[in-house]
Length: 113
Length: 112
Image (cartoon, rainbow over all chains, first blue to last red; front, side, top):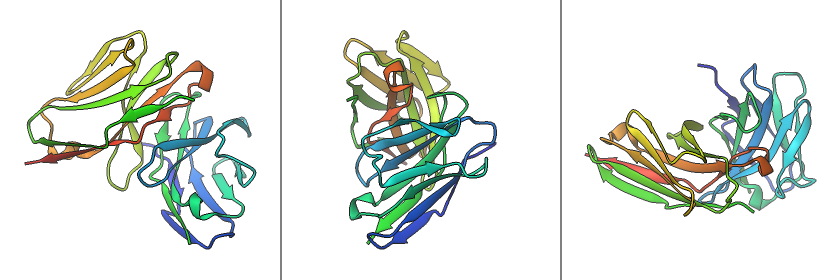
């Protein structure tokens, strides 16, 4: 069965550093998403991406965040200057239509020290 | 904004039925979902229900929707140890471009 792949599975970084989280969505999917889950809290929507541009974003997705689909297969989330409160599990997902059955990756656990 | 609430833990004995409950606030919710997350894996869509339905059954899974009370439940019949996982309730509506809003997840622990 096709799957969404995320790398790395764990990322440790120093506060203020830039991180890039990588995702390979399912190849025929058109919509791409990032969610995150801070330990013990809800899975929160960050951003959705369609047709090479952001289609929706939440209040969390501020100027420190950016997304890119650099080469037609990867979908990346960049955090420019990480804060302690960015520590969370970050999930990538993809779907054929907006909000239709989302397929999730297994997540990247980001720890900001 | 939209909110989805669910209890954090549920413990059941193998062979019993499990009922995981969820409440949501968005009265315009169109789709309501149950996702399952096994250890080390991503969220996997288990089942979903349209807001104009009140029940959906799929093998051991039964979803009940009370739209008036904005209450969704997932019943797992004959719960097995392999059902141990985190179950996420989610809702979506046209106002949010049908992008799911998730709850915190309920950890289901099945013991022998």
